[in-house]
Length: 187
Picture 1 (cartoon, rainbow, N blue to C red):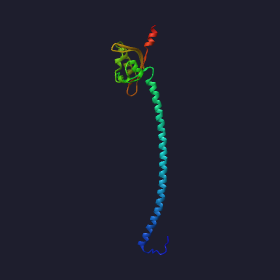
Picture 2 (picture 1 turned 135 degrees about the vertical axis):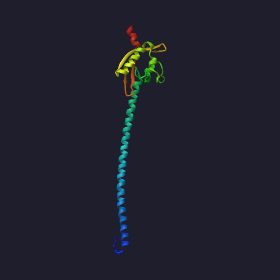
Picture 3 (picture 1 turned 90 degrees about the vertical axis):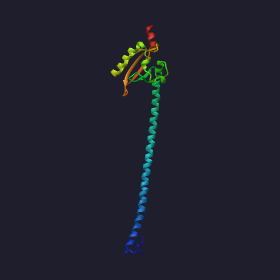
């Protein structure tokens, strides 16, 4: 910044030189600010990337935990030695396990939406209907013994327990075949 040879009396010339110096200073300041902002932005992006990686790891662990729980549930529910049924308030089968399908003598997928009462023998229908009514009216666990059968075809003697749970008011029913137990008891 050599001021020698400048005529500071000329206002226009003075203004021009001041603006040039301001531009140079602003470029230096702007460059420093841009570099500082870029460093901050890069830091924030790196931190955010690490946060996302940690969240991804947590999600992966949660997924593995859910998969393990699903396998346990499937083994416990589907392959239990007793029949499990979920019935709606009209007695239609919403869900059942493999043992339940075996008790009713049909494939699981073909029993969904069938009415459970169709598989109760005629002589046991009054007992089952009273049991089912109590399950829904008492909101407590109820139990009964009935014979399963359809089209005058006896299937087996069963002991069942049921309870209504959840907002959907579905009946959870566990059914155990006691045919062999009754034969042993009567001999």
